[in-house]
Amino acid sequence: MQLGIDKETLTQELRRLGIVRGMDVLVHSSLSSIGWVEGGADTVIDALLSAVSPAGTILMPALNGSPQDSPQVPPRMDVRSTPCPRWIGIIPEAFRRRPGVKRSLHPTHSVTALGARADFYTQGHERCTTPCGEGSPYVKLMDSGGYILLLGCNQQSNTSLHALEELAGVPYHLQDEWTDGVVVDAEGSEIVVRNRLHLWRWERDFTKVDEPLRQAGAMHEEMVGNAYCRLIDAGAMRRVLLPILQQEPLWLLSDRAREQFLRSLQG
Image 1 (cartoon, helix red, strand yellow):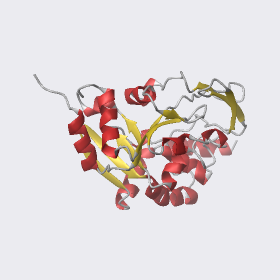
Image 2 (cartoon, rainbow, N blue to C red):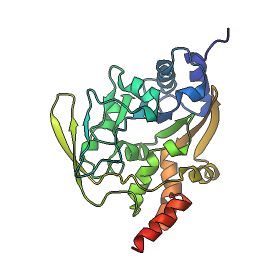
Image 3 (cartoon, rainbow, N blue to C red):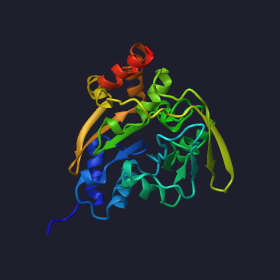
Image 4 (spheres, rainbow, N blue to C red):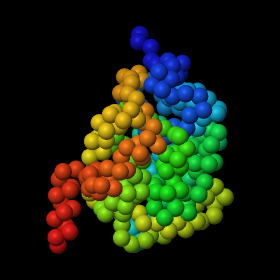
């Protein structure tokens, strides 16, 4: 009988990838890509927490936005009960349910966190004017020497690239009108979060960021179990990619979407 991957093995392989004690890591994940893990999602979470130690912080996306989000259909999120969607994987929902995990107050792009700096990353998201921009957990990670782990998934899952789109002010990314979303906090109070939300329209090709990140030494790649993984220095990612976006605002669009967007400008 073949044994699954255990916590100790996962921890060792995460450290070989480059995760060290005290590190703050935003994790995007695919459990199935790792192989058979003894204990499933909870074992992966245990290994991540072990790898960064109590001095570090693990963050995960808890996204619940949808293409329908708009001033006419404002999003609503309850930090006590709104689940993570299945499309971001099984691990984030298991993480959300852990005792002590904090969740940022945002109606579409909240982040969960556990560890030494969980409060720092999750506080204040409700005061941001865009989902992933200045003051959000995604930009805080870039400012604070944090890392992004793509555990068995590719750059298409890297939500922090939306943060760069917002920092660069690309013309296709945000809705023109403001939306008053609602977040219910841990005490049951309703908070109105006024944002320019994402416009779910234009197809991205985020995979193109791999090569410039490799060339800059901003990303380390290694296997964890059967999963091909990328560990990205979030601040270095901003230094490498933001100037490209500022020079070429449509760079992250797929070729087809770029053509469609340019045609839309012509009427």
